[in-house]
Image (cartoon, rainbow, N blue to C red; front, side):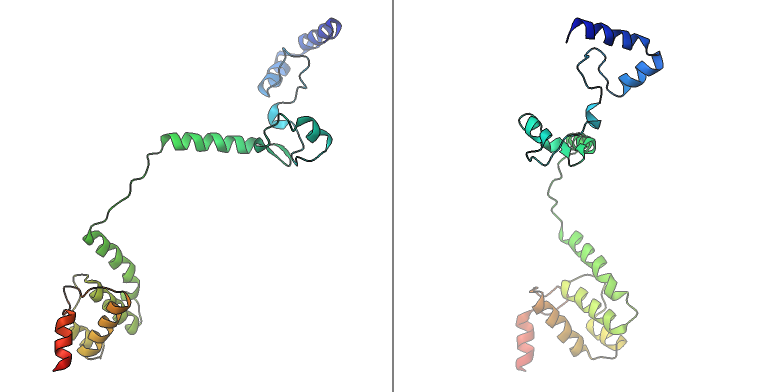
Length: 187
């Protein structure tokens, strides 16, 4: 830059009011560099298609295109990267949780309560049969359940055994073992 241009630039800068200078500095304007275009980086436009357009040819070698969108420099992308980096630094890594049998039973009981709280009696019966097959405590015995739903105890038992087989579950502590059931069938 010639000294004449530098003198003209300095004169222009001094003529600005303090408010105008502060406003330019707040937007990222570099008053010490006369060759600077005066447009802050977040507002500059560049072609990001990586094609052979005028901007693309001149800037492909040194522009990080990850920071640019089709509309220019992507300030939102930069803010998102900074936010994500700050989050990762503050977060604790989640450890694998091992659940006890009681905790699993409690979780399943809450999930199955959708069925047992139903207004339809057949759905409530099926939900209760699932809970019996899983061994969730506090369930009525099969005779009481059958009487309450106008079915036999054997029908309730058949439903529970069917659920047990479909879910590949061992008999719960409220059920007879497979050996005991096979002995009853022979009689």
